[in-house]
Figure 1 (cartoon, rainbow, N blue to C red):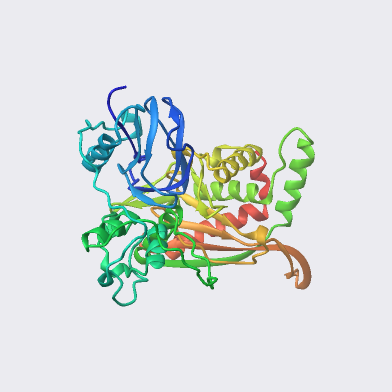
Figure 2: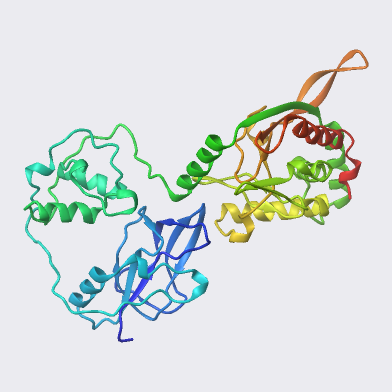
Amino acid sequence: MTEIKALTVPKWGMAMEEGTLVNWLVAEGDRVNPGDPVAEIESSKIVNVLESQYPGVVRRRLQAVDETLPVGALVAVIADADIPESVIDAFIADFKIADAVIEMQAGPATETSAKAATPQTATGNITVVPERLKQGGDDSNVNASPHARRLAQELGINLNNIAGSGRHGRVSVDDIEQAIIAAGGSLGKAPVTIAEEAAYDEIPFTGMRQTIARRLQEAKQTAPHYRLNVEVEVDALLALRETINQAAGQSQSKVSLNDLLLKACALALMRAPECNVQFVDNVIRRFRHADIALAVAIEGGLITPVLRRAETKSVTEIAAESRALVEKARTGTLAKEDYEGGSFTVSNLGMYGVHSFDAIINPPQCAILAVGAARPAVVARDGAPAVATVIALSLSLDHRIIDGATGARWLKALTEIIRSPSALNT
């Protein structure tokens, strides 16, 4: 290999704009071959592995863990060991993100020819920070990476004085170093300081949490939510679950109450298809099948893998497929097709003992069902008190698309199926 190669943040999916580097899998100086894992990058709640597309030596790792990077950002440089450092420096200085924005399926990352240059560095025994970079008011709202903020605090720099070169003006460590040099200071070893124990831990706002925040804020701001609430007896559903599991024996995974509810929701969507919709670009998409998204809590956030054509599947098939999706979600191995789309979402917090709650719609869907815990309650039966097992259901709807009567019809269909669930055992 005679040229320097760039490893950049790939565009995994049409909607991807940025990703967060969560882990390096190689060190500088390591030799890699095509297909070798280099780093883990989180985007849209999924951790993907960035693989090398070239043979060579990892000459530079350009980004720090927890850095959020735009698609096309330079992550690492691959080159032969005998290429001078000055040439590597020139390659990095000349690199342009616009040249590197690619689809993963489109082929290798953009190559840039190397040019010889003399790297500009400032050295010294200690970093000297000009006084004017330390002055200013509260800088807590400045968009800066966690590493940049820590460095600024250590050096006494006010981030209001630093021009950020990252996405949306985000300040990086490099921006701080460049500002020090431009202001007449010098770079060297940071002064050793003895810091007091912090009163709190600063937790980076990961790419997953940014995606969740953006989507749910959009949903609350654009979709006029309203909710329909019912309590329904589930003793017949529990009896059916027992029958199915006894018949299955040890031959397959046990069916849960949630599996039965997923099938019931799918059948209800077939009876009231006006709720089986998305709203995209002022067009209502009415789905022919119940593609139900499952809200799954994972470390650091939430993801919604999709159970496709749920109305066509048996409860045991739903049980096996939903468990597989949950496992893939929690191990970060979901493929894009596992979580994109969906016509309706079910969020169940019953396993945490939550009796009832309201859920935010997952756009572009127009409805989400919140399921509480099954619990004993006193109910009226034939004019007398009796004890039954009940669950609280809260249906959140987008009033732009689904009117109250329409949502009520769907909820009525669901409760009828739950109370007389023989249709589920198919």
